[in-house]
Length: 302
Length: 279
Image 1 (spheres, rainbow over the protein chains, first blue to last red):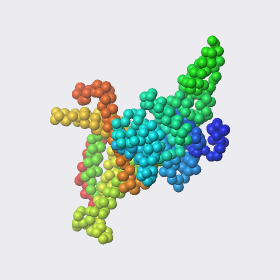
Image 2: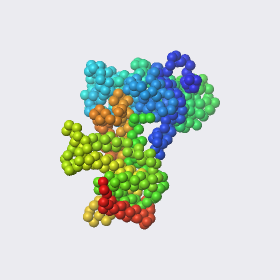
Image 3: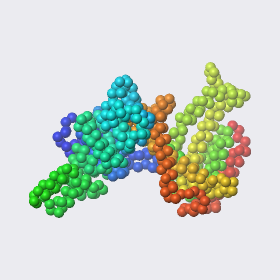
Image 4: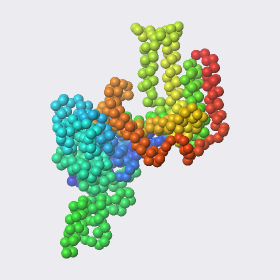
């Protein structure tokens, strides 16, 4: 438990048990075959209600394996995973109940759509829950409106006539329609054009601010993670190599470089200015903050 | 512990470099020997014959230095098929298959004769042997060796306009895609389960499992078609034109002595066909 507290590095949120608790989790792929390999080596993380947790790491660091534990797609053989009071190691745990609480959006989720009409595809989850018709319709309407595909306009569109960005949003709506408390997003904006990317990012922010969802965000995009997350975990070789607020994690340049990651560009600009002896605040994280810092600097020199 | 890890139980189409004699062997000789062995197990209708074949299969697995547990794991996905097959045979063959055989079980309209029991055992054994032989073949043969092997074997048929190179390519791509499709199917199962689908669960709930296939099959087909198109573009981008005048970077390994293996397989096939097995 002490390890969990330390990893949190966020004293003020410490009220009650975390929504998701992962402790000393190990995972081995292809057990009992010659292709066996260890993907997770004693990972300990926690997710608290209402926060946005970012998970960073290079390809093969174990990010995608880890998030499959968060909604019970994998069950721990070694280690502990507790999701909203459900211990995943227990054979009596109702995994579908866990998956209703934690929605997992895979990378490139549009590839999992299968119904000809958008509305039907979004309705797949609620229909599987055997909800009454009106409830299904209400949920689909809410989910589609929330991601920015107005229900009346998009429900009868052909799935494969949507643009890349619209398809991504429709797939996201398909997971939202089961009304999870936690939403886990794996590379949500990868492969989208800048406009669609910015819009989806705004929608994700709305999910937290307006809908009160707890988010777990896996991304390569440092700027995205820095902007959206309250807390970060950096994975390397299947273990947590760094944890803390974005300012703490990105502030430690040497540590980050050793993990093979570059801080977001605004952070790099500020750090270079400091290296040149300029007096700028060290903890600017976003373009706006870096801009303010530079403006102050220019003001002082005029 | 995962209900979704499909590839763990699929040995067909994987390559496992253990450096055994079977790996070093001339791919052409290996293909011929495999075909002869498949012939032997297809034409052996007796219990004793299939017992011998099973022993031979295990010997081949050992010769390829394939871990026995891994080879056996490859049989797991076939178990439901084998059970359904056996039940069908036991229920519906009745007296129609070899009416002279003595009845061993009779209950209502269900009649099971000794001949049917033997048939059930033999067909299950055949299935298992077939999986063993083909799995060991792909586990010990790289795709490149396989392509060149098939192409080289089909070369004499070129004068009859048999497109050897193209056929080799088709077989290679088909086998190469087994693990790829398994991984994609796994990903889709997980994705649909994540949005509330009743995926996974009991291996024996056939009806429920079949109904749940649609949300997986539709995207899986889309994926396969898209992969196929990407493959075409990738090949054309590298100016691929097909068989005629194409030279190769790799040369088939092995020695002349390797051809003793198919000769042995042929002798084995003849012996199995001629042997007067009592049962």
